[in-house]
Length: 368
Ligand code: ADP
Ligand code: 3PG
Ligand code: MG
Image (cartoon, rainbow, N blue to C red; front, side):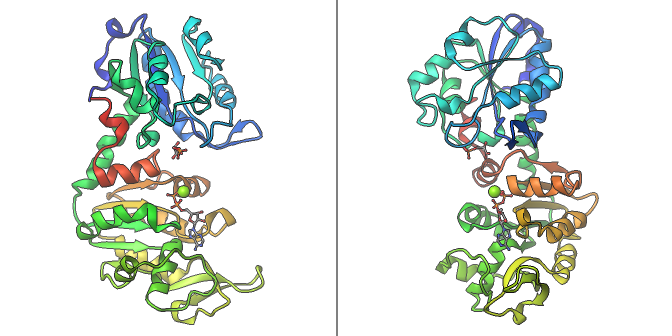
């Protein structure tokens, strides 16, 4: 895999570069409300512009292609980038503007199907291809895996950094600890299976913990749980998995918040966060780790139950290499102003999990 830092002015000046970025960021009332993915792509964009390339930015926004990337163009203009927003490929081919943002690529038929006719059309717009979209590298889409088949292709600076940092988890300085939260086992199972033999401890919170506790035959009331499969029943008794010992629960009245030990839970309770004893226990369990991986919030963060997640972030030991990834986890720590706590915050959610499990991703493989 070649990285754009190996390119000089001689290679880039006067060249058209199609850069696949992931500007799939939260937008509210026409404004970008969280900009990490855009900001992390800026060094690559600046590098290409400084070396005289014309940069054509291509991204998706949302799953279905309905939303517009215009607010992202406004955000970049607000950062003093002279940027032209274009919504048809014909105008892109004609423009001489140094920096162009193309409208949501998922509006074009064939993007998600990796149609080679669309890949060819995109290829015709440029001399070089750059992938600066780690978080979408798990998708076999035309702008991710199709175009690099036909053009000289390079990894952006941030993509290269993601790969280098996440590789450290595969060959960790031991002891390795993993913190897992969130709701659905399906997305986390491959990671769990691969890393359980490698970890010293795995602290599990969120609705995943509810599921494991239920699988042990204990009461979790009306808390969110996932399907209990035979594999999950086995996991529930694994000695390396540390489960919460107390929770914040809401009773029938939403205003009524109480802390309960696991064996005090009743049929009416709904678990919304870790309890204080668990926050302390998890902190102690990871205190000797030399490498930590964290994915998934430990409570119902979007309803404000963020204390367990905050306590976990605060317990990340100094001097330990720690990685956090996952859209909801990153958003929770951003809100709590604790994003500086982990050593590395991945821009990827699904992409990070898949990279950690398989050691690469379709979009990365397509670059070599
Ligand atoms: P990430 O995006 O960081 O990978 P996930 O998408 O796996 O995380 O999980 C996030 C979701 O898990 C959030 O919607 C959060 O509310 C939910 N969650 C965590 N703990 C609980 C809980 N106790 N009850 C219900 N939902 C929970
Ligand atoms: C993400 O937000 O995880 C990436 O932008 C990929 O988006 P997708 O899940 O819609 O493919
Ligand atoms: Mg999520």
